[in-house]
Image: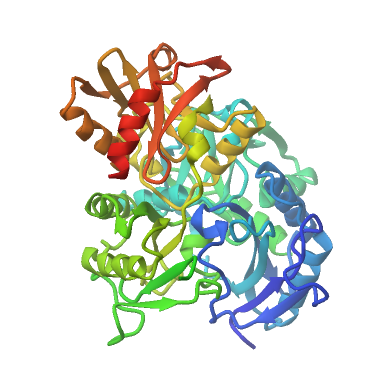
Length: 290
Length: 290
């Protein structure tokens, strides 16, 4: 079984022309070969959107939720709407090529395409999932300023806050800054003191029997949504809304949750120990893996 | 003569291994073919930097200034330092392939490379310059919120404000919002009321005999620097510093200046007419083209 599988979409959106009229909806190609033009706006301007899905036991997790959010991100960037059925078919074909027992990450990417051509570029790539065992035992996290007010997504939608765009250079730099400070990851905070999100994850915190997640213009996390779905059958109350940095610092427990790493508890926040709720972490990850 | 010329660098930085040991420093390749991996961090995260140079009469304008700024952008992203001599050689080889009389744009791109390989990707591409004749007669411009305080580059350097990164999705969205409002371009303003820059240009304004440009953590514009160099031999005083939105609105004249479009006067700001200083515009562009 190949470690990486790549499918190129022939017609990522029904609103634009196909790349090869009459050809198959997607083509499996060698991921070691180059497939992108240096004039693709995905690379020259980071002008595109993505989603990352976890594939476990041969099943792409939360596929519909990811396809829905992919479409929302595309709409925020005024990209042609992705053709959900073409993407679903490409994802299933890629997953069918993978070793059935393994853990993989499938990434969907839609770019505005080569400048002047008016056709988006789209691909689906599966890669082996990294080992997140250590992260699930506990992360050292620092808070870092994201520079924006918490409400900037509403006041200034052209900043694309919350859309999952290819313009992630700042997220990469934020992660480097966190590592420079001896941490594993960062939680981004607004210029007016609210918790936003992790660099590639949502934040969930517990105060007593309440699970809370910040809502500040970011797209809802698919994994955070599943955590709240889990909470329905338990004694936990859930809350989505503004979360201050003080509320995070005084939480009984906190997690960074994402499709690939699942629920990773925060064991240290800005150099101060935070209690790890091992029991709840185990329950959450058992549910998310199921 | 080909309309586009592309050179791929074998070793974009001496701090990293070459792509093909022992091969030539760069290779001229067909720009219509794909040359990038879908796993290049330049596209998956917009994790890279660029510069755009104007080529006029077979000469790359302000080459040293652009190479210097390219290195500064790379350092802000902790990318391996570009090997200036390799880039210069590739640029000169690309320019030598162009029709000598034409106007072209040469773009340099350095990305963090394919994830896990530890080698940056670099290329130089020349394309025909668009016709900016209309822009040089006058632009309708709107001011749009950039979401950041004016001093965020100093307080939160991990946001990469000012570095010329490939993460330009917001700039592209800002330009679409400007066009939606019936304008040609936007001037970005800070959340605390200061003028920052255009979407792909610097701002220069005139009050009487003073030419001013905002300085708020952005990298100095190479064309703006040449405008101030021109001013030295004239009766104009120059000033770099904070510029408020009110100072912009009450300017006697204003320009968006950039390597490719040169000095484009602002003829309308947020729906109000602004005087166009045609005489000064002509003098500036004659100097910049020389």
